[in-house]
Amino acid sequence: MRDEGGRMKENRFAELVKLMTRLRGPGGCPWDGEQSHESLKPYLIEETYEVIEAIDEGSPDMLKEELGDLLLQVVFHSELAREKGEFDINDVMEGLINKLISRHPHVFGDADAKSAEDVLVQWHKLKAEEKKVKERDSVLAGIPPHLPSLQRAHKISQKAARVGFEWGHIDQVFEKVKEEIMEFEQAVEKNSPEEMEGELGDILFSLVNVGRFLEVNPEEALRKTISRFIKRFRHIEETLAEKGKDFKGTSLEEMDELWKEAKSLEK
Image (cartoon, rainbow, N blue to C red; front, side, top):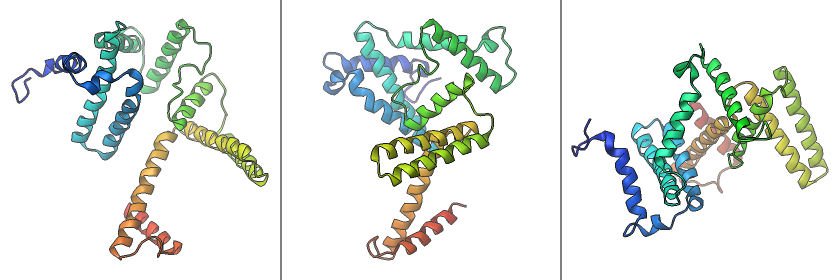
């Protein structure tokens, strides 16, 4: 397959790698030449979230562009490592290929997996065996500390649950939430900022467990709620602007009616 310029599309990845080497090399880009793994971290996070935004928007063109930006980060970090003699993009791909093959013995070996659930059980078992080889000393090891807090809490509670540290019924999880709310109220009554912070964290962690127990991703749930809030709030702003009004001259009751109106438009 060829692109509009007549070049073989199969060679475009190699072209991208060479382009990155050129940008980092003599006579290349001064900004690219100054970057490091550390300086690129914010861009890696930003590009990842822009991919998620593109998925939410349902725009193939936007997703294509943002995946390209994310791919650039992978190639960039690999080039930095190549320059230090640590590894290159081929090593990255080889490691990924080997991992995919070893984690799918039901496809490339003799293992049996009849459902997606079977695959996940097998995946986690193989992953745990690999981590034993790496001598990690805790069930909770291997979870990146810089994950968004809700996502990290979800993964931590998942790992704990897999070894039996788990409630037997959802009612028990709800009771835990109620217990944590009661303790938070007591901290509020004592007017203790330190205790309030701790108890609020306990409430959030308990709610994460509610989501995990019911197979609702808390990070995704909150992200969608934030998006809905922004959309509804913008409706209030736009409606007030159309009426020649602003927030200062609008009562809470009127804003609440506009909020309900925005909510009804979503149905």
